[in-house]
Image (cartoon, rainbow, N blue to C red):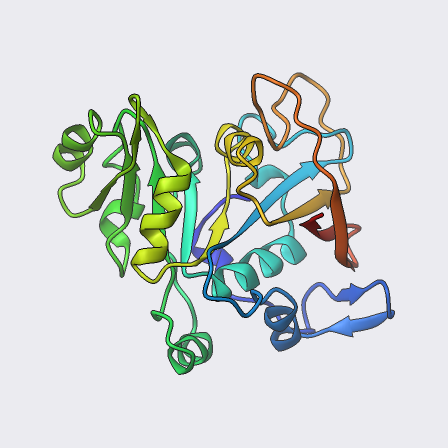
Length: 260
């Protein structure tokens, strides 16, 4: 799901109506945040949030934003409102022109009351450290972004975005995602929201580091040869159990699955 300035506000019932399909009840903005809260735990919990078309495409013309709608933006914002840290690949940050996270006053107060920072930190994963300093994220964030990189990529990242925090999690020149998550946990960032892209999600899935997968199904088809929500060199069959199913009046479905 693409990031932009207008995707941080959860729309009320005057906008696209969300309905919980198991009960048939409408869901308002405060309930939506509760539905996407994290389990009570002092351990790292990683939720992934992606969007796909009916025919399995994760992007249109290389971007996920073309698949989204008002309901998707509401769910996207609810997940961000609960997360400590947003984990995202550098290619997605560059392509989608990421901004820093911004939350309204009520959500900030809710986060403060339970000991979270006012807004989630964004952590960008790149083994090479080749982040794009022109992306708005690096000069418009309330909290300095974290660049998660290898030992060889650290100097490159620091020279490109001097204001960013650098987290080195190296494994033979690649990013050790398990070690990175442990380091984030040590910094008090245990509620993790991964927003892709497909390569990062595929790596996390292969390592069995994803606890929960949330997928928005857009009522569109794309065709072509676009990427799926996850990519990797080998097949990795993983069983999931659905715990939530929402729909909106535009025809979108919002699924939430936990790993069995």
